[in-house]
Image (tube, rainbow, N blue to C red; front, side, top):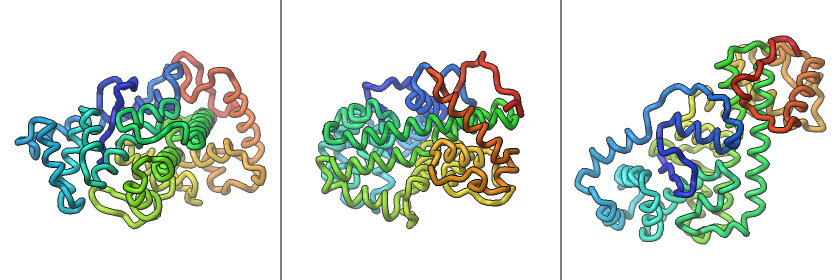
Length: 345
C-alpha cells in the first residue's frame, strides 16, 4: 500500500483512520462550508494500527529514521526487498520529512516512485492546493507548467459534485432511506476519482524533473499493469480500473468501489444494484451529451429499477439542473433541510 502523505500545509485533522480519510476527501472535494451533513461510513481497521504493528514486527531494530534510511541505501531489487521497503514506506506516514529525505537520498528508482506516487495520490484530490501539497518537500514539478492538468482536475471535481447532487435528488425521488441516500451521494462524489489519479500520473510523465527515472513506473501504472497487494495485475488501467483499485487501497466501502468500477458499463439485468444504477444514470444526466435521446438511451430494465420513464427523466433532469444552479448548492444539504418526498417530482 502506498504511503498516505499528509502535507504540513494541509488541514488534516491528525487521525489516520479510513473513516477520517473519507471525511477528509469530503472536505477537500466539497469545501468546508458544505459539510453540514455527516455521511455514515462503517468502521475500518486504521492505517495507523497496521503501520504500528508492521514497525513493531519488522523494524524493531531500527528505532530511528536515520537508521532506517541506512537500510534503504542497500536496497537494490524491488522484488527481493518488497516487504522491507513497504514497511519502511508505511513507517514514513508519520513523518513527511522522512518521505522527502527518502526521495532526495535514495538512488533506488522504485523507492522514488513509491514516495512520489503516495504523495500524488492523496494530494491530487485537492486541485486548489495540488502543486503545493504534492511537491512541498520534493519541489519536483513547476506548477506553471501544469496549468492544463490543474484546470482538468478542477473540471473533474466540479463534475463529481454535480453528479453527487444528481444522485441525492434521484435517491430522494424514489424514496430511499436517509442512510442509503447519503451512501449513493458519496458514491456519486467519488465515481470519477480514477480521473484524478490519471491526471496526477500524466503530470509526472510530462513535467516531473525526474520524469525519465519515473516514466517506466508511471507508464506501467497507467497502461500495462499496476501493483495490487504486492503483485502486478495485467489489466489495462483506465480511469475506471484505477479508481476502483485505489478505492480499495484507500479503504473505501466495497459498495463504493463496485459503483466506481461499473459507472460506465452497468449490467442490463434488472438485478443490477439500485445504487449503481443511480450513479450511472446521474453521470449521464450531468454529461448531457447532445447525441443522447432520453427516450431510448437508458436500458428499460434500469428505468424500471428506479421507477422512471422518459418524461420523468426530463422532469428530474430539470430539477437537478435547478438545484445545481442554486447558490451554495451542495450534495450534502444541511441537517435541518427537508428531504424531498418520494414520488413528489
